[in-house]
Image 1: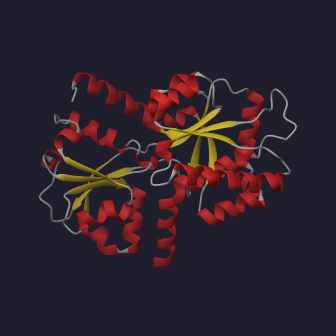
Image 2: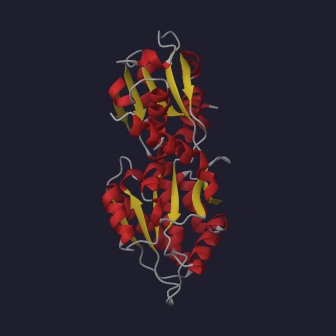
Image 3: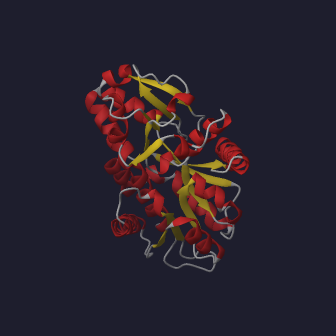
Length: 311
């Protein structure tokens, strides 16, 4: 019903930050106060792109509050250490200097620094049994846009956020494969932080097209079925893991095993359950690196196409 859809929409809009707060709390509570050489303080880095629309200080303060809450419950006493890293250069420097033990980041950034990261496990957010995203390219049902070529010179909105990290790469890829330029050379592109502000201008004929997640389109349709009837899907991406949490290669196996175990047991913790309920956040799954295969395939194809067809 409508109330369920509103709650669902709230979860989608907050889940990037909410999931990270929960993840940080779990990780920072996993190390005992009497740490040994092998069980040292865990240092977690965040790509700044994970915190779309959130002030750095607010994000770090929230992480610290929830870490302390779970620390108290678990009878641990660990001061969280976290870094917010802006751009590939800062991420690469933190990894090469071994300043962090794990990193939460979008997949396109993961791809560019993957030589520093563990190639066995990737920690994904799990929402309603799904760890991946599908992107949809939407136009108005009465639009004269019927194929990709018709997007030439048109206004196109992208929703921003970590779950959208591969959206432009996907659209670039299918445009170039169809003999057209990359999207920023082909369309008049805008990037918007909110689902409704991205999608509704297409419904009201103020914008020609938009790219959002299929989940987001479904939510907007549940809130107002006229939206689903009024918009048309022009193209759909494969299922892609768009962001998550990766260990660095220098993290020792016992520490990594403890953290993964703590993640799988978060629902058994009253503090963890409270965080999940408050932020409407999903659980976490430690997946084999093969869960990223479709994203890696897309990124490889995109890289090769840009080498052959530079902007």
